[in-house]
Image (cartoon, rainbow, N blue to C red; front, side):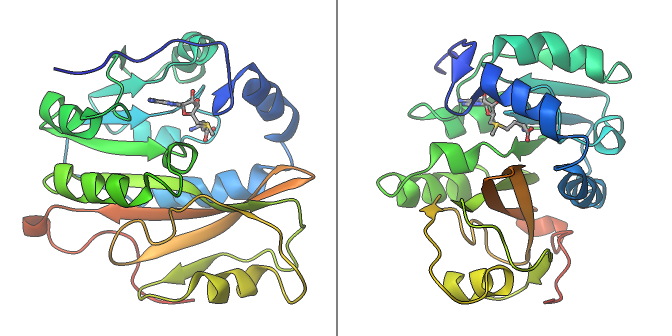
Length: 241
Ligand SMILES: C[S@@+](CC[C@H](N)C(=O)[O-])C[C@H]1O[C@@H](n2cnc3c(N)ncnc32)[C@H](O)[C@@H]1O
């Protein structure tokens, strides 16, 4: 049993405002981030023929190089406009739209059950759906329900109006306090921020980059990959840097 996805045009986590921002900023302001993210996505090689993308919007940050490797790509996306735009923007991809809400109660279990043979990609949606109250439960559910799947996610770690001092990327293979990671990007002074409660979402290596969503809103993004135990180490590089 699964909960059907809602449908919307406007929403805090996407919708018309997000499409306007993408139209305005993706050509220049988002360029470096999109290139970094494309490299991360293309370095991920889950041995599966089907990919499920959760929260693709119109694919502004998705890599065609990843999508075209799969025989079928299933999109789980409540945004009506995104559902119309996505197939037009990636004509070489065999799309299917399904209606499972994996963030509803029991939703991750339903996701795993409906797509036992698919790789799963959470496309910057977990950071919008996690908060202090549900973070532990959602982390546990991701770990338990998706243990047998190849899955990857990029997600907001923090967002802030303060412009970063360094335009770096970073790789971590071991635990580091969040403050120490933030200090690589913002040096000294106060850093008023929103914590999305996703830092170190998975065990093992993770990569980080800055996404200037607008000139006044900067997000630190984490990329992490999970592979089932029998599949060997994940493809996220293990070196710190
Ligand atoms: C911040 S946007 C990211 C969009 C896109 N992946 C990108 O990076 O440009 C989050 C997306 O998640 C979608 N979303 C929100 N709740 C969802 C749910 N329960 N299932 C699937 N997608 C969802 C929103 O509609 C929105 O398109």
